[in-house]
View 1 (tube, rainbow, N blue to C red):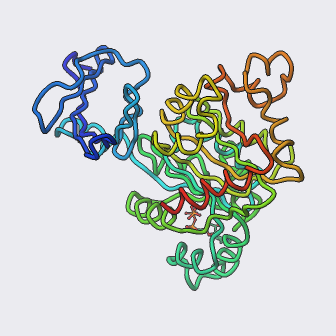
View 2: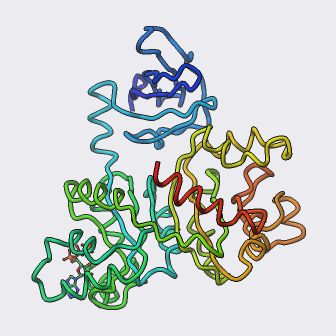
Length: 370
Ligand SMILES: Nc1ncnc2c1ncn2[C@@H]1O[C@H](COP(=O)(O)OP(=O)(O)OP(=O)(O)O)[C@@H](O)[C@H]1O
């Protein structure tokens, strides 16, 4: 690596106060992991070159949102040819889907995805209609397994994911393994289809077969509106940004405790949205500002969770607000296992039984409709 090596991106920031979108060049210097920012319109340095330990180069790709000094910045383009060439080959996207047969293994599969170095940059649980499934698998129309496949894919919820990695398409397909799980079990026993698939159609996961299919499938899936949220007898759980790489383990814990996860979406909250959602804690929780800052610092995963008396039951599994207290008093809770402090305490969960529906509505009706 040359000591001159640096990557330059065009980034946007929505300046709420001025109601203006401001554009900057963000430069990342790999030699010492420093950054600077240059205001494009006013042609002047906006942030002098400095260390910013919260940001790593792996977080910079087109479409990413990064938070620098509480500003949420969207990476919209490469600012030079060198950066474009380097990143277009290094970072690519694919579409991955957890099929209906793997509902119970959603957490385990997400955990394996992260452990193999793929990043999940978008995620949504939906229930496809038969028409959606037929459109999605249109290339297989007329094949003997088409009816079975499309009936199966529309039989229950699926989780679609935008996956980012170096050579994402082949990387994800290699992790999935051969189409037929029986073949996978003998030929590639460590693959997802070998571990979680059962037979032909019920093969656990889907993955795009080329960059072109990935782009088409990502657009198709993430524009489907079919959130399976039920919006009754529910509580809302949000996996916080610091715990996002532990999301698979947290989801698995929730499912193993016998809760139903009936809706799920990845979301990158902006400040006004986080303040609106957490408004009841303003003036009540001393950590309110720090909490809003943390909730906007990266992607979260919001879930609708269901069971009898779910709000109170789920609070028991989440554990005390303070992870230190949780570690001493309730060591088998989510916050004891994955929390760091009162702000970075792994999950938000609804406090009051009467708010369960309202909080789920906020994510799965209001935000997903925006
Ligand atoms: N011979 C078959 N019998 C039953 N189901 C099949 C058969 N071939 C394919 N399928 C189903 O159709 C899906 C799409 O088939 P395709 O040939 O595109 O496989 P793939 O590319 O490995 O899988 P996917 O497209 O789901 O990632 C398979 O994942 C599987 O669920």
